[in-house]
Image (tube, rainbow, N blue to C red; front, side):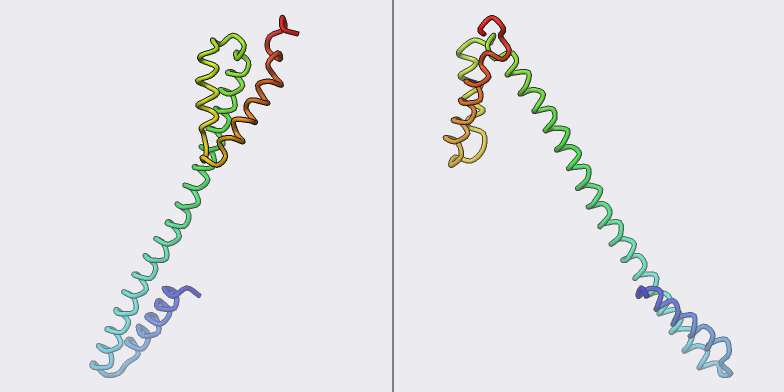
Length: 134
């Protein structure tokens, strides 16, 4: 049982004791206890609701971020494919600039390996988009 429900149950019990109490002092004491526990229950419920909202908001943000990352990856793939399809028609200086920029993406330790992979890919596919070079 959640804490706020426990506080509410105890507050209700003290409310019953206050109603059935024969003395005014006891009634007053039980009513104060009831009010105190009701207040604690309200506070605990607010905290519980805020926790649930925070957890769900984090999950929502994570899902939104994953969706944006997937969308960006798709856009980058499409742009990359478009560049490759037009590669042979690009001026050599632009080809070198694109190659240098693409080869420098990532960590410094991976730069040489990445540049090699890009060069092999471009060499392997250099005639794919230009039928006159077959």
